[in-house]
Image (cartoon, rainbow, N blue to C red; front, side, top):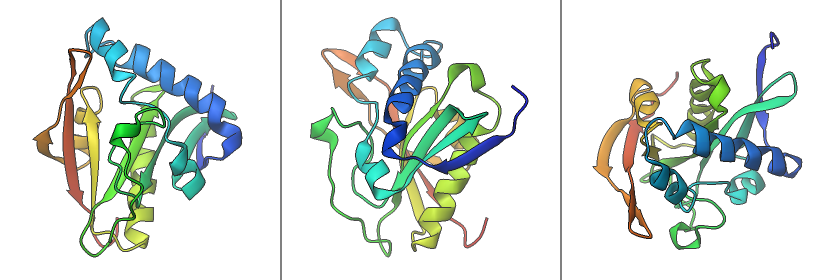
Length: 182
């Protein structure tokens, strides 16, 4: 494909294509850094959070009308997890004066990595969070995502591995101070 990458707010019409993209990103994209058991276990803590779409804070990157990446940000307390991971959910609104915005559910099609898609989404998320008064952003980085986030200025806060049926899914909580303009 030679068409330009475009980014837009995701809608409910995007739900099924986004779920398919996420499944590929989890199953194939994480395979290089996780064991097969960890990939399976990661499905319990990763996935689509439709609250982000309802809030209008979730983006889809397309090339030629085909989704190649997605991700968003949130003004809610949930740090990570999809609709199915109910024990991770906290819909409380954050206070921009003291809390960090949440960067959420970042996925790139495994055949489209290293094209700037993740950076494009992070930039858009950070701009939107900054516009709403947030001075910092936090995220939960997967083993595959941590290098990108570190390259984009996020610093590890703590290891926060998830335990799923006796399998450890490596996760790192990361934070970045958002500059006044970027």
